[in-house]
Length: 291
Image (cartoon, rainbow, N blue to C red):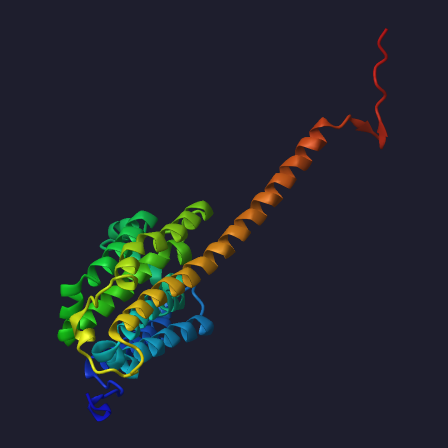
C-alpha cells in the first residue's frame, strides 16, 4: 500500500478530552474548595496534585497521541505499549496522586467499603488483573476492540481500573485497607509476571500472526513484518513487566532484609545482656566460693 495511504495523527476525541477535563476539574474541586468539607484536618499537597495531573497528561498521550493510530491500525507492538503504559505508569501515578483522605472518602463510605475490602486484597487484585489481561488478548475480543472504538475505549478504561487495583497492595495509602506485608508483596510481585507467561508465549512464539487486522495492515516500517511486530509486542510485554515488577521487588526485598537484620542484631544484644553477670557500682559481683 502506498505510504500516502498511511494516516497517523492526534486524536481530539470529545469523549476523551471531556472525560480527562472532568477528572481534572473534579480533582481540583475536591482538593481545593471542597477539601475543608471532605476532610477538615487535611492539608493541601501540591506534589501529589502534580502527580495526579501528570497521570492525566500521560493518559492523553497514550490515548490521543499518534501512538493511538499506530496501535489501532498498524502495529501490535504499539498497542501493547499502550496497554503497558496504562497499567504500569498511568495507573500507579493516579493511585499515588490521590491523597489518602480522598481515597478514604471514595472507598470507606458505607456503600463501597465492604466491596473495597475484598477487591483490594492481594489475591483478588492478582486474579482480577491477570484474568482481564488474558481475556482482552483473546483474538476475537481483541479484534472486536480494534473494530469498535467504543469497545476499545472501554478496554483501556478496564485496563486502567484493574491496574489501580493491582498496585493497591503495594502502594496503598490507607491503614484501613493497608499494603500487604513485605513477604506477601514479594510473592505477589514475583507471581504476576508468571501469570502473564501464557499470553506472552502465545504472542511472542506463535508461528502465525494472531490478530488478522495487523496481518493486513499497511507497513509503517517496511522491515517490520507482522510476525516480527508480534514478537516485538511479546518482548515489550516481558521486558517492561520485569522492569516494573522487578524494581519494586528488589526495593522491598532489601528493605525487608535490612529490617530483619536490625531486628536480629537487637534481639542478639538483648539476649547477651540478660546472660551477663550482675554488676554493682560498676564492679562485677564476685562469684560465690564453693567448697
